[in-house]
Length: 455
Image 1: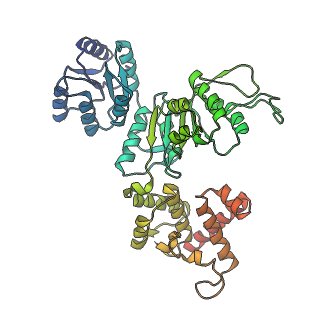
Image 2: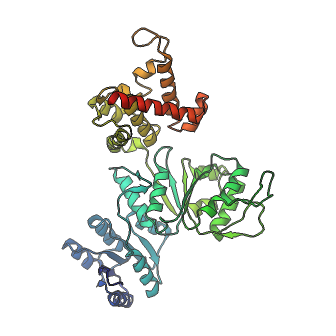
Image 3: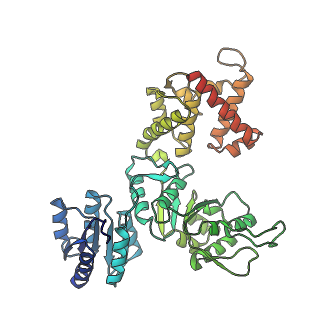
């Protein structure tokens, strides 16, 4: 421990007193304060008396009170304190349960003092601020206990090499969770590379993932590094992994097993050091039953499973997310003081949100752009089950009995296309039959108009 580092308080509880004493001796020699216990009751008593620790290492089967009880009590009192669970009779189910309760690591006996020394050093390494930043200015905003628990679990496994599978409906924020894991890991200084497996045909996807050599196929005029090579030392996100063809899944499985990729047309494998995070909005077990997804690949990807609940299952997040997006887009569009009206809040709470958080984000951006006064109304939200003023402009007769202007109709069509494509500007432009550049210019024009009216 360096001279500028502060001594840490570490609790070690296990029935193997020889192991406990050796580890405590090592930690004391490197300048830490180690407290030991041979039973769970002593640990719970110390916690009730207000003692706090920087790291807890506990056996699972302690006399008096079990390691899971110790884990729960520590996490309820010190959410950011890492807890390592060790056991002589482990199972996958027990390990998953411990990780869900917030365990930072789960070790199966026999464990050596050297291993525990390495684990303790890793757990005590200075980390970035615990917040809910997902990197690049993105934030995960939630008050829901399940989401907060998922965030804590994601934070505890962020530094491991284990593959993570994030599932949930479209628009729930799966990529944000993937970025959160990367930002909270020791790989945060490395690249984060995202690949949408549904956006490319199979042949192109293989080249995109693994790269190709010059002359490997028609049009391969030079060697190209694949996304796995570009992600070396960092994290790769395989978005919508369920859409990958079965033949390509076999090649991906080899990459996960061997830690090396084969470029298309290549003669030698290329080693890569990459953390793999995958996402899916489909039921992969049903895909396995239908022969569309390899079971062995599923278990390779699903070491740490995270399921993000849809927005309709966490109604307490609706208004806090709405206020978050309102603040974000008001700042972006120079609209200080704009507020959500009481009726708009009721409309937001009553909406079913089939598009989840992405739909809510789009609705708030649209409302900030369209609202004329200082207060957002239900009409400004432009839900399909309402009769908003902008949507009415598309009818043959406008609200005042006259036909809508071309500009009104154009603006309404653009926002309806964005709503239909859940904010994807490329798809919206295709639906409208215009270029992405034209769409972007139109949206900038609406922003400038709103800023001029507000000023």
